[in-house]
Image (cartoon, rainbow, N blue to C red):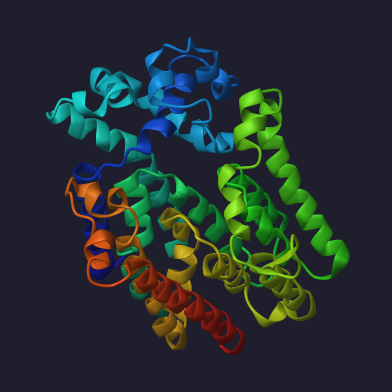
Length: 396
């Protein structure tokens, strides 16, 4: 490993550590409350129903709702495994202050320690993923790839600022694709099924695997079976079936639509996804698996009002392709920059508020220019660039 690579990796590590200590988002509470119930209370199979079983006067019922846990089980089980191991060094009084009442959190070293511990799983998992990916990247592209990983804005934002687990999904998707660049294997489908155990969307990438009906059906069944095995122990949970089996955010994929009658419509996401699947069916050798996955994700990002942390899923693919293909760096850079611009227009808790700064850029812009119109222009730029990127993938 060269001195330059070591410097880049150390820079990325220091940047992550700084963000771990200096930023905070309320969403981190729900994930880690579930991790606490699993690791410290033994509610491994019953945590989805825990809050609904509490007396209606309980503090947790007042602060949270019965539908607090809305993701598949691996998202919570992974965090609980780290909490179980690190439990002896957890500042539990500060943890309970975080869970009960944010304003009661002591502003001392225990708060810094807690923020580090809550985000530490992502540092370990991303680190392992990066070590594997570096071994796979072409030598000529290695420096650019590592620089891209160090400055991976969506990962920095979602994992080390928000404390969200989307980086794990990103790594699983990337490994699924890069481990089988030329031809998918069973493990490609298994890894997508495991990724769906955190959030279901990766299941929609399964039709991009394989060649011919039998091959594609095999991979779809393997991926779906993997996902079913993960969620099967929780099907008896009313809370899981009601709130997590079909994640509440999945309806966002049909926000963009064209009415064809009073009650029927064409959902742009499904139209474009099915077009992509047909293209893959007839010309699957045109792109590598990394490129097919990115194309599928860009379709999703281009026509949905996606939560900003979801852009993390495709970020490693963007870095990989950008490092290897010079002709695609400009549209990929525009995608990332437009994502950052859109992020600045989300609610303040997702940008300046992460650092404790009370500033609403959207409201400030809105005093001089319709901010929604400005955000719509940015989304149009993002969507158009996403489509151009897909078309350029075809020619590269």
